[in-house]
Length: 610
Image 1 (cartoon, rainbow, N blue to C red):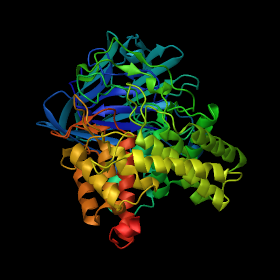
Image 2: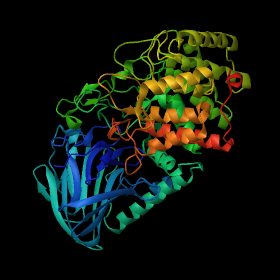
Image 3: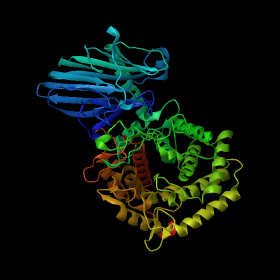
């Protein structure tokens, strides 16, 4: 059984269709095939006893350190003990489309290579798959030189190894002794609808590893970002790329389900779907780094998904742009550190979130600034969204944080409705979007502004508030300048920033998204929003750098962030790795770089900002 690992002790590997989490202890504790949201074959992350795992690690006491190979998503874990050292390399092989067209390779594969680099090392190999999120232990069937086969429904798993494996119960084990320079190879592949391909081990494995490193590094080299914190920005971009479902261009929010926002509590959600609320920040990140193909793919997926329910939008979709599955609980799993329930599917699918209309329209507008035009179908979709907003913006909704306590008149949702109409008017006036009902959209847009300026501003608090006529604060208020509703340096925004950071500070540069009981962790992206607010005119460039640098310390040893951060310990909380947090890091870095290029101009004066 694998030892218990903290969330930040995991690193992710993937192939832009699925992902796996590998612990610092060399245990592969999470893997879903064939897609991110498929049932897990390894789920020890959520139940060490029932979940299933695949561990390769020294038998004796050792220390471990990790890194990704260069600018890739190929993971190396080096174990050092009294008798020697060994390096475990983990990856899901990737290759160019040309290579895949010319060679037979597995449709889905995890490769693990372990090499003794000094002295001699005895390694334990433990392979205990459990299909359907740990619900079923399938029998492993020995197939001689072809390895071990496990059948599950319509799919078949094959485990091959360059060392003998002993089938024991519903798993397989081995004790391997390697001397300096010796290597052992392992390949786990999966086929459901594609032909079964079982590649040779050894030299072909070495070529697959080299090819994968090269593929990731060539992709990373296309990043055009030359500003500060480049290493963190590129690592975040690599995480985003890994969480992109290549066949459709969708980006999942995280690789996991039900890692808790509060350990031992019930705020455990399935994030293996695609949320529209991330749209404009994701588009900015991709375009800002020069990854135009990924931006185009993401926009195509956005517009494809939204056509399914046009003009209404769903909060989240599958990677194919379909409605996400209904939420259900996996009662046979204990959950991460007894954090029950474990859920798959997400009930937010039935919520109303009006902010997402602004996100989709702003994302499309950002892309149009690069590409210059929309096709006829896209224009029809965008106009339909605008008309929906013009008709429904007065409705209460659940809002961006998806509470399950009912609808409210959320300031952020109103803000994004304003941004949606304002952006469509701009596109219409520039000629990029035809047949925009300018007069109607302008009338509704201006009505939203009047409401925000009166009912969302609390004179007593001297701050915008999270809800209309309310006295509550949340971190989305720092985003008001981002949508160009009000300048970051305006008196109202400076006062709002002061109120928000005073009320929501978790210390050490961290921000809660809002206050709640019991307290959850500080929210990663909200903390980066603070740095970005300072960079866009709410503070000095030095203040923005300081805020950003304070947050870098909360990445784990391979540069990954979860959804939340435990303020006192810095431990990661929530699903992992979290694309929302990495998008926030990229956007904040881009804003800091833009501020630097502008010559660190002083913030706007009150008269300039008015």
